[in-house]
Amino acid sequence: MRRFNDLSSDDSTREDYSDYFCEKPFEFADIGSRGELNLCCALWLPDIAGDYQSGTFMEVWNSPRAQAIRQSILDGSFSKCLEQHCPHLQNKTLPKRGDVTNPEHVEIIRNNTTVLEHGPRSVVLSYDKSCNLACRTCRVEPIMLQGEERSRAEVIQTWATGEHLKDARELNVTLSGDAFGSPVFFKFLREFDASRYPDLQITLCTNGLGLTERNWNRICHDAISVVYISMDAATSETYAVNRGGDWSKLLENLKFVSELITSGKIREFTISFVVQANNYHEMPDFASLGESFNATSVLFIQIGNTGVFTKDEYQRRAVHLPSHPQHDELLRTLEDPRLASPIVELRNFAGLRKEAYRQEALLRSVEMIQSYYGVLTETGINGTEVVNEALLPHTKTEIRSAIDVLLFATRTDQEKENLATARQTLAFFQPDVPGDRSSLDGVAFEDRTWGSVVKEEMIRFTH
Image (cartoon, rainbow, N blue to C red):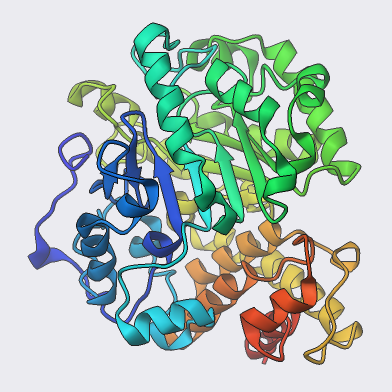
């Protein structure tokens, strides 16, 4: 990963992260195409914990390599992380250790814990690259597992979806191929018994072409709370080049997902866009497209190289690099006010926006957070009540995006710490969590609810 993306591993140039904490290696598991267990995005942390042949899932989850990765967080070195590619390190949006509110994480920091009794809270299934498309940013040719390769993927799936899922709250299917294009994943979704894991919610990742109403009704749709559709284009012409799919069919399916989100059958709907030289000019139109289909989040991703490009081809595509001949045009595109929408997540691109446009986004984000805080105040959160999600003016994703905008704009370390803590805390404010809410609240924050903790952070901000 370092070689493909020209990322230096020179520790002498690294910034100091010793005051920060990242929960990812303690919460997250991504099972890759070789059955390898990643504890973060492989582009951000390329070291693995082991693979399906190294032992049971829980043995690999707590392997010496996994412990070394967690230790690099606890010792403050973040030595296993690719600093130049991780937006949380780049923008220092991780919480300070003293601001961590999750009791489990507090104990991990206090006791320097690298061996975990519980399995991952978030699991991503990425061991089958089968897809009905051959997008150039992902692969050099079409992939559809057959024969021995497919049998191996099925073995990995059995290993990756065992009893440890009882500890998980999120299951992502899939970041490697397509949830409908892969017979292995499609079979899993059809046969998954949601009743065995009542606290588990599924994020469905797909290119959208197979997400028809008929297929939706064939899978465990009651367990699906988030739909994530990758597109990389806002016009049929660019979609044909970058994806090679049927644009009209995609728009038809986007309309169906729009109905799912407006009817409350799913909680979040994200469309994503990998930014490169042939599509960056469509970023504002893509934001408008998300608005028109009621997406709760429109995500722009910096193109990376996982080995599918030669160095020269990657340089031609990577318009985000200052050396790229179209980089100045990208900067002008980022000034478009449509990219200041609260549902837009610019991530690595946010820091490239000019001050005037960042100010516009900042004002909209402040208004959003103040309205959110107003609802928490009106409902009288006092440490025992839980906010009805129907009363909230915005989704958690929208609030997280608003806090991200503030994080990029803030001028002082104290404000950055407060906002990073608010963003982290927001992840635990989930009125839609199934099961016994009161016991969940009690475990998480003793005599306080998630809503009351978020409210505390908003009070700190508004004052």
